[in-house]
Length: 261
Image (cartoon, rainbow, N blue to C red; front, side, top):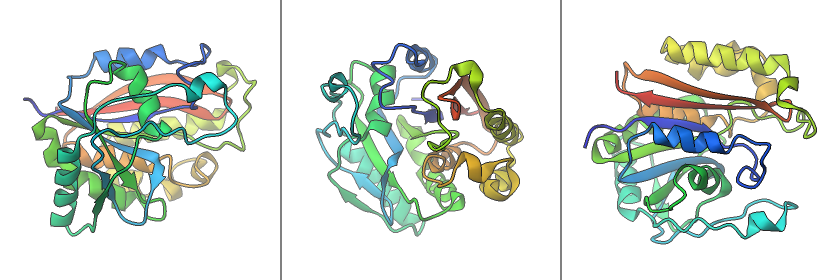
């Protein structure tokens, strides 16, 4: 099997699968451009631990880790099989690079199952989830991705799921896509330009260098998964971008695909 790309997804609100105003179909169109993986290793913004933990669940539950949404959302399930072999291999690779890790049974939170439901609705690709470390920085998550690179040679797609901009205090849930805050575009343009230039130093220092960084990300957890996907990419990666626009005024929906050149 050829080496698979690594991917970053902006997973949007939990209501993505049931809200026709959101760009759910575009997740399927992105999936159609990707090679089919043997398994997926998902780094979601919604599972945070002090050190990386890989889920060895054989049948991961669908975790509805949100409140106050329509009943139809809580009835959705994503019954994909787990990938305990991938989880154990990921933990071993991290340990080899001096990154302390562990394994545990853990289900799929909405940062994992919501985009996967839209991309691979048959739920027939095994999925393992790997936690992020919200109290550690971009450089740590880049290093995690570097340690996991070998998985891409074994048919595993490494997917980071977060949000390229994420400040819910700025959000206006009645706003139209065309009413996006201009500062969102300034931040995402800077980030895409630095990704295109493969300027890793600038990206890892984004909080000091990117325009409006603290406003776009008051806390890091929704951006950290992109650094895992970036770290897993080849040094001379080719960048693919799927930009779906800005929703709720402040939440940019941008996906990145890091393919071998």
